[in-house]
Each structure stands twice: as C-alpha cells, then as structure tokens.
Image 1: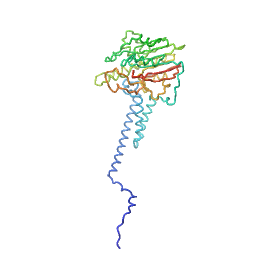
Image 2: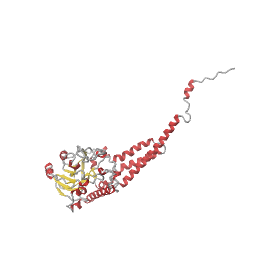
Image 3: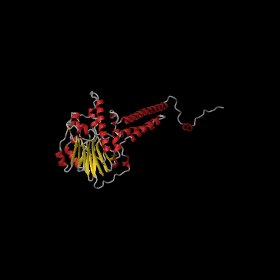
Length: 405
C-alpha cells in the first residue's frame, strides 16, 4: 500500500497566524529600543524634576533674605507653576518606579508654588465684585515711566484725565537723562502745570513720588529713609530719588483721616547693567539694592504698625506674589485683589516706548508679572479694583481703585 503525502489545510494555516519572530529579528529590536528609550526618558525626567524642586525650595528659602536671590526670584509666578505642571503631565509616560518618583517630585514643586505665591486670583472664579456705590472714593496709581518721557508728558495728562480720581498716586514724576545711570535723575518742577491740569487738587511731593488729592493734606510724615533725608535738606536730588521711595500723606476726608502711601520700592535689578564681561562688581551692586529694599519695606511696615488711621497703600513694589519681600506688608494689610475679577492679574512689561539705547529680549513686551499692588488696612471697604491699560504710555498697567471709609 502506498500513502499520499499530507496536504496542509490552508484554513488551518491562516488561523495559526504568522510564525513567531525569531530572536534578533527587527520586532524584538524595536521593542528593546522602545524599552531603553522609556527607561532613559524616566531617568531624565526624574533628574529634571529633582533639579526643579531643588530650585523651587532654595528660591523660597533665600527669597528676601539674600542679595543674590533676585536671580532666582526673577521668574514669574506663572513659570513657577507651569514648569512642574508640565513635568507632572509628562511623568505619565515614564515607566516602572520612575513614574511615581517623577510625579511625586513635580507635585511637590507645584504645591510649593501654589501655596507660596502663585499670582492667581482664585476667588475671581466665583466672586463678582459688584457695582461701585455712589459716593465711593476713587484712587488711581501709575508708574508714569519718567512722566511719559519716551512718549510725551501730554499723554500722561490725557491718560489721567480719562480716569478722574479723587486721589492720584504717581511714580517716576522725574526727568531722566539716559547714559548717566543712577546720577541721571533731575527734579521735575511743574507745579504751575499741575495746578492748571488739576484745579483744586492739593499737591504732595517726595523725590519722584507725586500725590494729587481733592482732599486737604493735613500731614506728610516721612517714612523709612525719608526721615534721614529730611534732616539733610542739602542732599542732592539724585540721592533723594534713589532713597525716598515711600510717601505718606494724611488726608482729611469728611470727619475721617485717611492715610495714603505712595510707593515705588527700589528696583532689585536693572537689566541694562547686566554685562558679565564688564568687570562690574555685581556682588556690591546686589548687596546695595537689597539693603535699600529692606530699609524701604521695613520702614513702611514700622509706619503701618503705629498708624491708627484707615490706610490705602498703592504703587510699584518691584516684587511679585512669590517674592518674600512682600510678606510683611501682606501681614499688615489686605490685598485689593479681593475686588478684582481677573484670574491672572498682570501689571508689568506691557508695550511702551523705551528710554534705553540698548536692545535685548528684556526690552520687549513680556507681560508676565504683577509688581504693582494696592492694599488697605483698617475700616476701608474696597468696591472695585482693576488693572487697566496705560495705552502704551508705560510698561505698567494703571491701578484703578474704588473704596469707602
């Protein structure tokens, strides 16, 4: 008997599928390469997350306590939150033990940013400030960028007249001559023009600070370094400009005395000085700026501690929500942001003409910071607080505040 060779059933072969890949074939190499990439992706992600958490912790520890801290503090609060948020999302693609490590490190950095000054106005999501009642007191504050020097002083008056206020708190009411650095500031003597533009207003000055008030000014006590400057009337104006950064005026408002503080805290870092190859003594520069800022903040805080009157504090603090320089003022006064409906309030580095001859990325619009603040203390009710455009006059937004005593 002879047997015929077996014939394979094609249906059986199709059901069995393709034969398994042999060791060393392309499929195995792809899987091995993929695992290796995910392994290194996780390792790099954990390393980046650890470095960012280290930066966040060190920044918080030295902020307002070390003169070099400004290089860490310069990051906008939005970046302090945004980077760990992106890393937290990216940790989902890590594998093995690296995923929880990456997620834990970035979550810690994100939490630190949220609880130590995120710059976010969370109540704006559910709160409506409501309408301003009749008779409310109107306060406007603005850093005028050297009184509109790069555009025109006429633009300053035009902008202010669009916001007819009871009290104006204006900074950088000064002439600045480029190229002379801190010695380039000159007093602006324009009382006649101010009286013509604002008839009936009372005028108070200290250095670059100008306060215009419909209400009588009954006292103008010096604050912080201002007391020492008052004792030496021969002090050059450039020195007065550099050191007299807080002006208090006590106003007679009906039967009440309202203390109003006009503030322009010393800038911690002027980016036009940043030339690492110039041989400039940056350690001494940062130490001097830091010491000045500490004197100004502590002087304001001491004056607030002994002031029994209802109080408004507004101006350019050259500090963000995440910088610990602001801690003392926040402990003594309430942020007017409670009457604002912007979830992310920003006030600085908007488009405006520049007075500098140099050009860099810092000389372009980068509206990522809030450095202009308004506070109240005592029996003061804030009805509305807005950050409004200065129409290209200044890099700063105009602070528009309505309140009642």
